Image 1 (cartoon, rainbow, N blue to C red):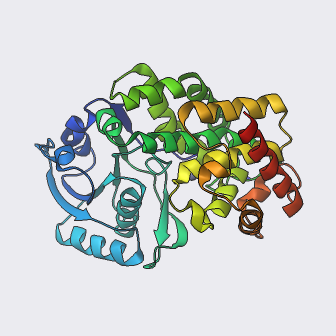
Image 2 (spheres, rainbow, N blue to C red):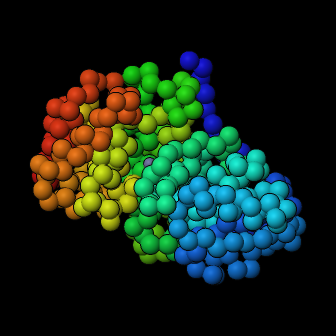
Length: 357
Ligand SMILES: [Zn+2]
């Protein structure tokens, strides 16, 4: 296997970063087509500096579907766009990313929440018209620019920022699993040493600054802890998962997502419990499990099935295990023998630990 790693070409993060939109976008194109999350407060994109560029904006509600991509691509073509920008959460970013790929144009990623690994990656999750995941689409290029305004992120609900921490918590555990098993990363290549270094720094940053960052975000206070954790959840976790690989934590997420009871929970919240299960599956000692449970509690992430809204554990186990251990699933990237019995034992041990701590 070749060593492969992918990155956004340019990353800019800080308070008021959106003020640089015009000058940053002008490096990439002159006629930018912006796809904007309909739920985004007007104030966020009003008064964007567009001196050096022409910006056409379209507000979109709803998911990243084939229909939405086709419609956005047609509108962008009519506007004569030479680059596509996406402003919003994961679904809007994915729609803009897939639209840019369809037109073979550069993509500018402007996350207005930091709830997942979407902003820096080349992955677009495509939904069907009924709201179910249709497929994962890897586009040709990572974003040409990721512009993260920390003032905008801290104004969004704190729960989204916490969910981003949950998604980022999986980055190291899944990268080390792929390293140990020799599984390929999201690009189909072998890990680079750099990817593992990124994943390690991601974890260290979360443990050192996570609780403080959440407190600062809640108080709308700008701080080094908040900026550090924002970098960990957006840049480090984005690069780390894609070039490091994924494994049990996300497989358990997929299992949890198959349960109606967890539909109100966010991606990163389900992943955070998946991390505990992944540790248990790898026979982590009690001290390590306790440390991760304490971390989840300190930032407000779930540590038990009950925290995720699951009451009937026996019924839930059947669904989670069936979905997580399908043939070809990412759970087989783990360096241990994965069987339904081993996964069940890991879920129960993680859940018991979360209850106890
Ligand atoms: Zn994720």
